[in-house]
Image (cartoon, rainbow, N blue to C red; front, side):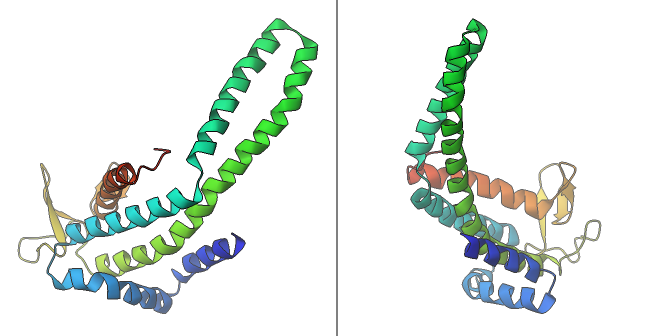
Length: 204
């Protein structure tokens, strides 16, 4: 786990090093390049990337998280909280002390499940961050918000949004999200739900 965490931190630090970032993006391009060569619009490429990340993240979670155990711990904690509240309301000091003795054991179980959820996230980020390096290298050459015109726009550098028309991938929506990131997140959310349903993965 600590090796994976160190690797993730190292990859994030490489973002500041342009040569390393471009090199990693180039390696990712070996996989994504064929889709680019097909002439797919950029929003379709983001959909493909969101599907890929949704698939491997779902697989990693499926084989590293015990969802049955997680549900069991959650039910146990919920039941304990109800009984502990009843003990406090009854004013039975002996029962309260007995419940307090059990409390630490239940909290330890909850902590273990939290750590189990954290571990796969590290591995997921190790793979996901290089993909974002690739996206960054692609969008940095695209027209900024307000610079998109019909003369330079095509499906590789801009997108048509309902009610907004021709838009830059840098246009901000929902106050803080650049359009490319918002589109990626929406695609990732939808595709991940479908994949998790298909793989019968709990926790969603």
